[in-house]
Image (cartoon, rainbow, N blue to C red):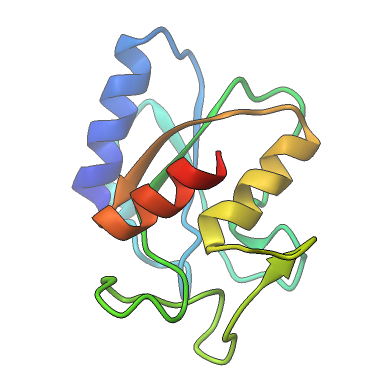
Length: 133
């Protein structure tokens, strides 16, 4: 996970990014090895009960977000580690639209007018987010 994140960081830096915040947001929020993370990135970890959970730290000062290591929503039979939020959520829908985690995280980013510019994960989440975004 750390190396895939580092590749995204390199891409962002090559595209002109000057500040990068990495939110270690899946599970127990211990997926990134701090000592191996790109030195130009800041790491935000820790479990929270706040509704923005995986997007903790975002605000209107961000130019873009990237989703790394994302997975298809619950019920996607061939999806790698397919689930939504926790293993107990069967479906999360907003205005009748079923969303994967990347979908509701994109909504949170949208509250601050921050676009999703890159998604890495299995082909199922890429298809699901392409359809949504």
